[in-house]
Image (cartoon, rainbow, N blue to C red; front, side, top):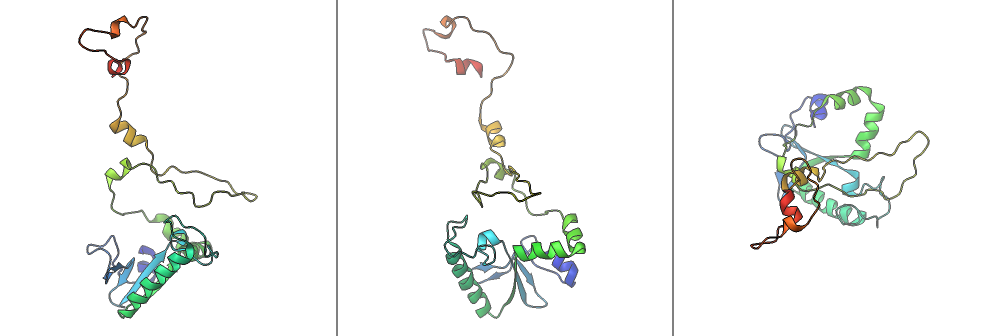
Length: 191
């Protein structure tokens, strides 16, 4: 959105604006240019079932819908928004990537932008985001396959789990762990 604002000399209302995303009925637009009465949508190919990237209608998307069902859902959404007199310009993720490959200035601009989205510190406690977008891939010459752990379980474990403290003690007998009032387990003693 920032690049579009700079490139076209407009102000875009988005999720990061004071007023939040522009609502049209029950739907929200990714971007809204008030002066032009123009909505902007940026569709992630994997989430919206881009026809170029996911040509098979029965491809299952991460949201549990098939590409065909998601496209139908998006078409109904667009139909409603346009019925309210709103023009919408839709950009697909693959189109933006193609533009970045061809336009050096655009690529340079994108690299300098920081994600200024709202941060929710508690979100790190909800485990990892795992959703394989492709279960098998053979890299082409010069390609490298990588794995990135975006949100790890590690912070949650650090907050919610007991760890042994101090230096370890060598235990030669189990007699010290029994008593008249209660049986002390090794784990109770360690923590």
